[in-house]
Amino acid sequence: MKLAELLHKDVIKLDLSATSKEDAIKELIELLDENGAIESKEGFEKDVYEREAQGMTGIGGGVAIPHGKSDAVRHTAIAIGRTKQPIGWETLDGKPVQAIILFAVRKEDAGDLHLKLLAKVAGALARDEVCAALLESNSKDDIIQAFDEQEGES
Image: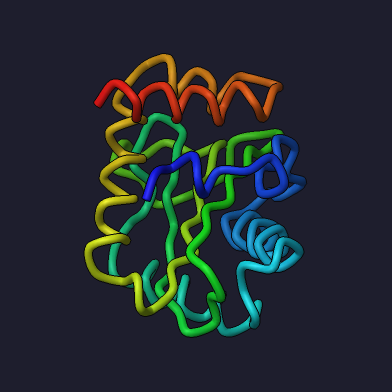
């Protein structure tokens, strides 16, 4: 599965009102719910926090990649959000985050697909132009294109 199949403008929000990790996760879950990816906001949120308890999802550079493998997910999806101001998050570099990429993974996709998607996103974020688009662009299309172009080169 290509990232482009999961990245849609409808699940990208560049002006999250969140001022905390919890608020950011709630806003992104709401986006996923509005787009039919999940059938239970509460069930999925519980699974996201179960994963958060296992270890930090802030990868550094202002980015976090929380994720949940859940029976509450109808179809595997990704939501991207960017906060107006950096927010506190447990991160590898100890710095706050401003961009959050939330993975909603069906339990059936919890093995290889889940790991492949995480690897693709992490690989994309290793490229400066992808991070710049994610953290600075005001165009959802530019963000999608940055991830798509990187994946085409790998």
